Length: 276
Image 1 (tube, one colour):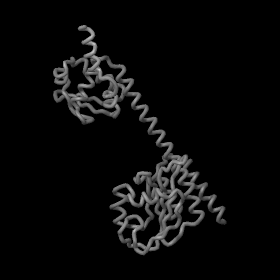
Image 2 (cartoon, one colour; image 1 turned 120 degrees about the vertical axis):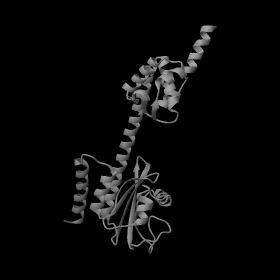
Image 3 (spheres, one colour; image 1 turned 180 degrees about the vertical axis):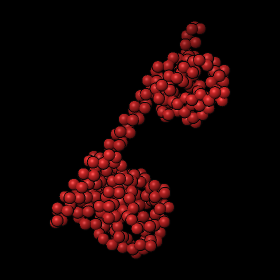
Image 4 (cartoon, one colour; image 1 turned 60 degrees about the vertical axis):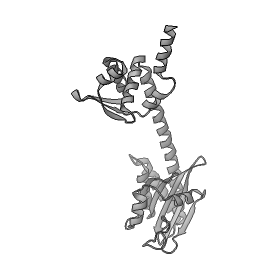
């Protein structure tokens, strides 16, 4: 098999892997590339966090494990250095015993090569694909595979970002619809419940105590909680004499309650209009 045939074989193998895998994430992509290229692979987000990685077998490094893997991010100086490069940086070689990841740290290994490829989509820098290995430079064929992989990673990051935005819109709309279904007193009841939770997203509350403090009947509070629970905005469980356990599962509830004109303000306006 000549060089071109081997390159085509590896690209097709990568494509087959992507098309046939039931679950693709950045860790599985990194693991596949690591095995194919016999190198450690790091998929790094623009902010320096590790989206995925795969370490070359036999390469044990306590400093890397403590300062990169456990922290789940690249050192700031290295990430900034990589982001400055809009083009691939190929076959940089370790200087003496200096660690290529951690400034001022000595490495027990020598003769290490590393290459990084910008992850870009529609001119937007999304991160970096970093590969490193010992004693063997990355060939032109290796670089082509890494650049192909970086394009795939960029598209996947865009897809995930779009999916996350869609999910956030869905969650926000769910809260808006749920709150719109409430009567004025029911909305005030929900506001009173959230006020009792303070800054927490869950807690055990006594509805009769909330009713007494807010001047809203207990039945209105219970009905309001049932409505927003049925919409999937909160979880509610009765604990008998202890009270009611409430957990906010949609983080847009507080935001939507606080947005616009408060219903408590509306009530005051209505009172004034009736008295005039």
